[in-house]
Image (cartoon, rainbow, N blue to C red; front, side, top):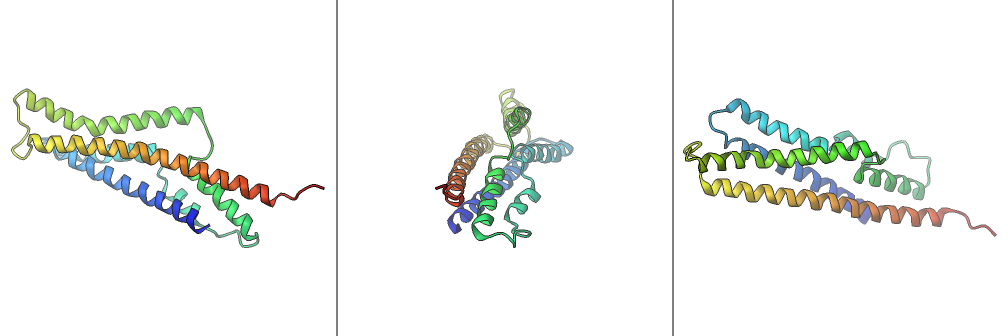
Length: 185
């Protein structure tokens, strides 16, 4: 039980840290914009909120999965099975809906596109021989491309890790259910 709970908590921390790194990268990209300070906050908050919707980072839902209140009358195995079910639902977003899959895919694509938008814009400005500002250099733009590519790679692997952990939790839940059902004679 402790190892499974630690796995879930480490995936929770990884998701939160990824979200914070994404928000930091959105801000680092936004400061590349020349003299459009009103767009800097938009290009920081916009992609961050889109990604939060895309990965369904609902703080209340994550906190509720760690809460054990209300399950005092159940035995330990039943409480553990309930926890496993909540954790599995959290990792794979609970119920399947084709409409949600399309919406989430669009949000994920939009969040990645917005992360690449500003470095591409600055690259086009450089190639048109219009330097954005004195602080913007080719190495800074290249570093942002590398960081955004790394974040995209991490996002894909974080999602696949959640699915793998959810499958393991489901197998554990099936094994516990088979042990808890009485054998017929």
